[in-house]
Image 1 (spheres, rainbow, N blue to C red):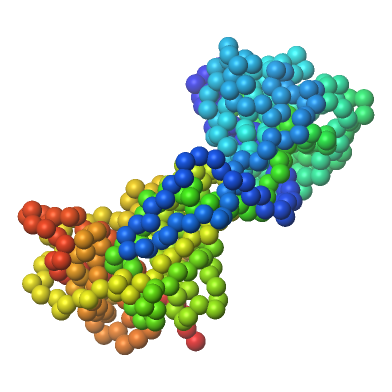
Image 2 (image 1 turned 90 degrees about the vertical axis):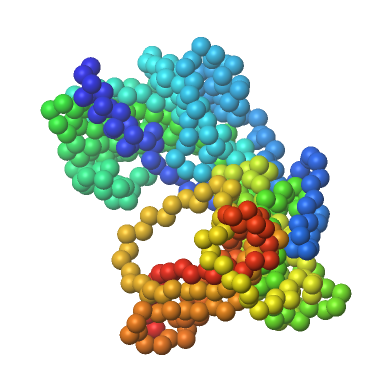
Length: 476
């Protein structure tokens, strides 16, 4: 086979995954709570920013699914087996790691020519899910001269799978909902056809693309047969017939989980500057005030958000909790990264009068270039990029302030000033947005312990000046 043809096949299979059919399943309304075993970890940070308390529970991986029939398998690979068990069942195969296209499935394994179905070798993909979910997929790709030839292959494949698993039924696939890039056009033929002794399947056929779909609902899981035909689009290309069998169990996915604070490892804590800024304007009792809030913990980054506390708190404390939680993050090792189920924890925030610093007037102000800066979240996993092609208008301004470096490198800033482009009319609300944005970004900055000339940074004043661009908000 020529290199051009090999390239086309690789490109084709990269564009068209094993199965693009999505089965929408309901979610359980029961929240699982299971105590996580292991050492207890506590780290209260500086100035009582966060008191880590027990009481909330962590729901770890769900108990194993109920035993499944031994017949629900592809060759030596059965539904529910671990990746280590799969390797042990066929150590001679060229196993490679396999990353599913969405977060409902954990990284798995794939191997070519792993099973014989209908007398033909098929590759196999094994993907463990969450809470007992599991997926086995067998795939075969061969050249086919036409949609009719691919349909013949499909019928033979369904007939053979019927002998092993039982009668398959036509799957209701709405062709109009498929991606235009994939289908290219509406089918000239859409009908239900027969295969094997009693099975049926849905068949769509267009000029260059066709597909077949069938399913079998087994008490242990859902089986889906899928076939796709792609006509050659160029002289160097090949017409391909893709067949696959997917066996999938959906598991027992809860609506949400709770993790005990003792099982969280803080990696970012609210800084001295954050504690000071969020304590300003609050009527803090002499003995202090403790606030418990239920917060969502991001599994992939460890950041915290969506905190909800008692609505009967004195004015300002609930907002201060939200602001402090934005400067808090935990290690992700215990958070099951990739798990799509929301994770929550009951976090305790401590407010004390001493968190409000007595800041003197700025003196001997240095240029910001004398300090080496970092961001409090620099060591966290990166945020996933957001692709946006929307056109928008922006307002521009430069914000400056005098900032004192604290012992932990955070910056307490005063004398904020907004410098708008010359000729623009005054707008107090817009200036407030620029001030809030600048303060929010600068609270996340950290200065190195020493200045670039070697002197101590703590206690020194620096001038920050930064241009900002804010998306314009249209107001009536």
